Image 1 (cartoon, rainbow, N blue to C red):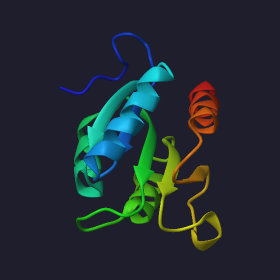
Image 2 (spheres, rainbow, N blue to C red):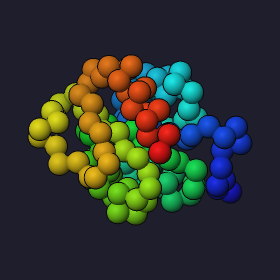
Image 3 (tube, rainbow, N blue to C red):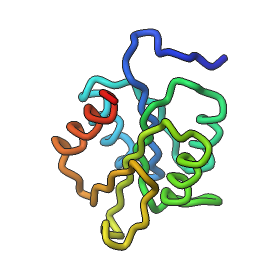
Image 4 (tube, rainbow, N blue to C red):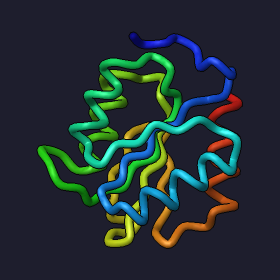
Length: 127
């Protein structure tokens, strides 16, 4: 059963990353920043999670992933279907000037600066 508000009132972040070590590092970053985390290994899994939960406020996604869509298509889908959700997009293979991001999205190249990502998470959570 989906919850409309996290039990501890912390913002919920969905981390979408197919590489286990990268996902673990991103989850640790989000937890250390004081947020609750939900994990997905693909964009397809992320959509399934978003369809079943109403408490996710930020999605932190990699671009390159297996499945029917990559992180950029996921970000565009989220902006269309769940407009209030904030988006952080990251990649180790493409650069920001190569990316057409949806509105209110922020891009960080890998390896990303954890302090900058944490600051962005806090900024997004405050809105």
